[in-house]
Image (cartoon, rainbow, N blue to C red; front, side, top):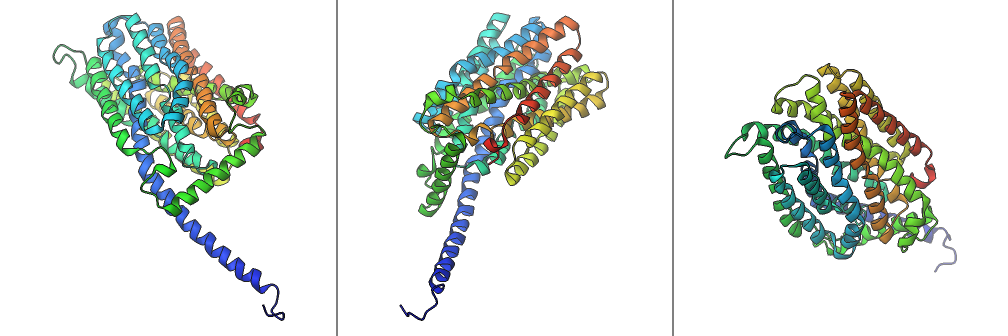
Length: 454
């Protein structure tokens, strides 16, 4: 080395080399995430559209099924909610099995099983049969949603997950947008064909895609970065580096060994705090999706297909809002207010809809605000627990939060049905839903920002 050479020249050269490597990695990273997106996200969305349609189409079947089988609002609400008891019991073991066996086989198993059970609803004739089938459907589907949330943590770090989860959960409003008109059309067009009522044909026809896509899942999904043949070595290196750094950050944020301790999940008060928040949001979500056709019909709309078309409008609004706020949350790396605002939107929408039940225009507009709010809460919520959970703790923690929170799926329809039978009105249950969403917003506000804003 020339002793007269300025000492700064070597670092400057190294700096240029480092910048070049960073630029190259940035290009590799962009290319890799583009591949990951197109390989898994559209397919996962399709799976969730089918899953959600089979989960909540009972709400549309109710328009005809309730009269045919003489089910009261309470019977229907209890049966709709029993899905989540089965869901609760098997969700944690299901997610742990997926973490062990891989998403490809386990998600395929879930879809095929629920497709078969969903089709068997055509034989339901008594309240007991209805209760049993809803419980079994919950057992079959348990693990799908939290399994996909866990699966996304294998590919995306925390600062990219909110918009991906929001996109995945667009399956809920998409299922409403297309599923409600489809359900109405099937019930009208196939009614009394070959001696079967329209609701029976609806269950059979809408169950077939779950079975078919379940088989396709085995050939489409890959269990993780290392098993993706469509990624080259550099792309795998960059993606794995991002996941490793994210898990280290999660451990630092949590202050506990969440990456390796299952017991830590159950002893951590923050996990149970997340359960409580999610319970509030899920209460609003399933009240909307199960009772939307009934609420639209109550505003004066007639005809199953017309009810389906108008029921699609709130879900269309939800698709737009949930993706805008999902992108915004990731771009600003802010989670709490991106949850508080839609929760309050949901509360306001339910309250206004309750006050104008006999005005179709106002009711649809208010339900659109409610749908945009409550359906946006769910995807953005998952940015909170996944910010401090990783490894097996993520598999178990996500399942615990989702299963406990989804008990609201039992409470919500049963509560609404019972209150509706008691008061012969939807006003009181809608006001109760508004209050629960406000409580959820307050709980999010009380969550420390430093824990979740990543």
